[in-house]
Picture 1 (cartoon, rainbow, N blue to C red):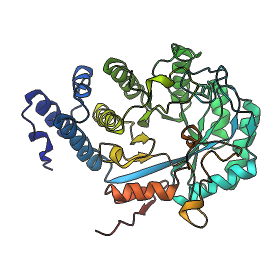
Picture 2: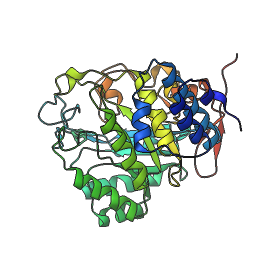
Picture 3: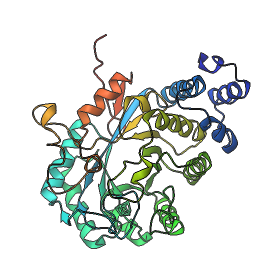
Length: 364
Ligand code: SF4
């Protein structure tokens, strides 16, 4: 396959890195720092993104993937993360728990929309026995091809084995950018949990997050490579939403163009990883899908009636949460994500073991 993008620059070093990537070679950390050094609006960054896009299409057979999210318990959180809407020192939210019936309903809407799996999210501290019982109930009422995945605090191997026995197949866990500096949690404890996830035979979902404009290329590259080296099944990039009243609010938000540039570097940095099966971008957007990402995280499942009524009104008071709570906007649905994948030229979405759904493309 000849992909000409890498030739469209007079920069010899860039041509060399991208040409090698097209031939299947992962750039090293130094090269990745170099790739992140171009202004997001530059031709060099454009050529980088176009090359990562072409590589991802070939690597994943032009198939997209969606993973849902259901926040089942929220409360002022001891994690104390300086970027988070739930952190105890600055949060305004009140404790609430989503009923299992409501969770099952939301999960089935995700399943109808064609997600591969659903993250069940809690705060850093959570009652393990309660959570185990909760996901066991969910598992009985959700189609078997839709995986259940944990996005919770640190856990022991025994706890992971119990979740696995209850039907969970993976977990999201990250040593975040600024972990221990911008959070009350220890990087070594987070890392130990990641190693336990791998040891328990669960799929490990990773992300370079939460990126803000202040993060250096060095920090970003170290975080990207740590994930690739530890054997994640999915690498991703998520930008930080500036939460009013939080200590990092004043830094503002990373532009989408820069987010897409980091996506492109993640796609190249994981090129030779045998475990990575998809590259995600959050929040969901078409530019990320055109820059090396093939996976999105819808915040709500398939709308029942019309697309406009799926996520409720912005800021509407309700129990449970998704990442839309941070933006105080409507939730992005599975239908929205399928549209984005189709608009970006993906042919299909992977919707469970060996199954897929062909995307209806917009008319030219
Ligand atoms: S990011 Fe997670 S651990 Fe940190 S405060 Fe928010 S909910 Fe807690």
